[in-house]
Amino acid sequence: MKKHKLLLLPIILTFIVTASAIYLTPLKNIAIIEPTVKDIAPKEFYDKYIQNKEKYIFIDVRPTSAYGKLHAEGSINIQLHELYNERKNLPKHGKEIVLICSGGLASGVAYSYLQHYGFFNIVRIGGGIENWQLNNLPVVSQLKIN
Image (cartoon, rainbow, N blue to C red; front, side):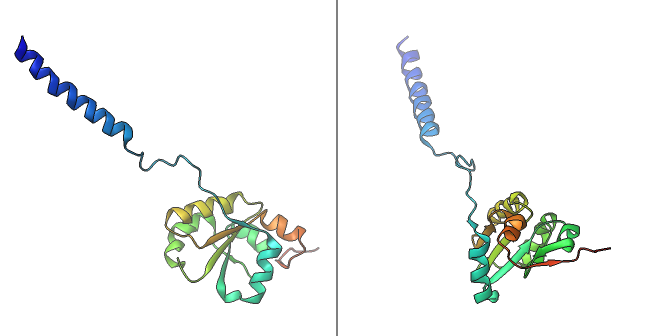
């Protein structure tokens, strides 16, 4: 009977140590806190942009059809679904990547996606092209008037 008690003691101690190690180990690969998106007001960005356009890559992530109809002056079109391939051509240092869409949702997705791939030089235009227009900032329009 004493031998059984002696064998049980190491098993119980091993269980306690293992359970404690698991409980006290920080959780990895679990985002408990939602990542934040750094927004910039359209007017604030535009003022900086016109001072030094070379410092920025201004990307409109909307579909080509929407971009073709109306887009912020100076922006280029890289559709959201194209970012997977295009991310390899974007700089992670040196230039700031500025994202815009219609109202902020798609550019927020693009922001999170790029951040996931190690981009920390990114910012989103708060309120998208809608807010850009409300601030009377320049746009390029291809709308056809009959």
